[in-house]
Each structure stands twice: as C-alpha cells, then as structure tokens.
Image (cartoon, rainbow, N blue to C red; front, top):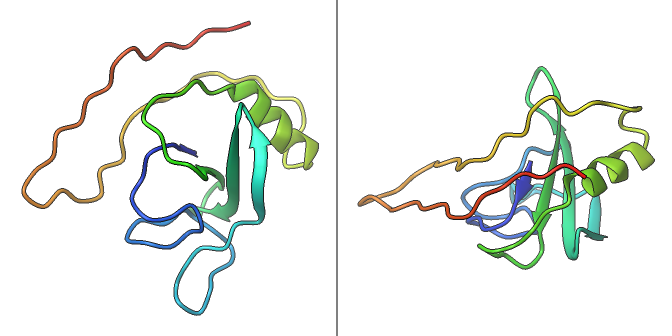
Amino acid sequence: MVWLNYTGTSNGCGNVKPISHNWTSDGCAIPLYRNVPLSGSRWNVYVGSNGQNAVYSFLRTAKTDNTTIDVLEIMNYLKSLNYFDDVVIGKVEYGFEITSSVGGLSFVSKNFAVTAE
C-alpha cells in the first residue's frame, strides 16, 4: 500500500494506522524502515500481515494530494530487502479507503494514469 494523503501521522499514530508487526505501548504502528528515499519522496515503511498475506505499507513522510509514483522503484526496493524474488505485476489498483466520514465528505480523483516503461 502506498499512502499519500492520509489521516494520522507518518509515524504510525492517529485514528487510521498501517498494518504492522510492531506497536508502541500507546498503540502506534512502528515503521520497520524510516525516511527511505524512493520515487522522489521519503517514506516510512511498515511490514505486517492481514492474516493471509504480507502487507507492505509506504507512508509518505510529507503528505500530498499531487504526485507521481514509480511503482517499479518501490517493488525493486522490496526485492532488495529479499521480501520476494522476480514478480510480474498483473494489475494495479487505485482508490480510496474510507474509514469514516462524520457528516459526509467529498472524494475526488483527477488525472490518474498508469504508464509502463
């Protein structure tokens, strides 16, 4: 998962938290790697399990609602850490994970594109 503009903090605290194997006594997720430079940004990286699959969450340390992400660079980073060998990406999903919206909120996505190089 790649988190760009989210509630909570990049340090794993707040009302919505990434999946993690490690937690503080205050209930904050602990990143396995901090301030990782990838795709023109810095990321805190969390590793955990959803009960069936390994989950890798990249929280951008500076939130944004306008950026370009190099998915291959992120995948190569995970490969360099031996989380998996060569893989073929079969599909890319993009969307919002709405966890609450007291009073209602408006969600807009503009100019989304996927390119292969």
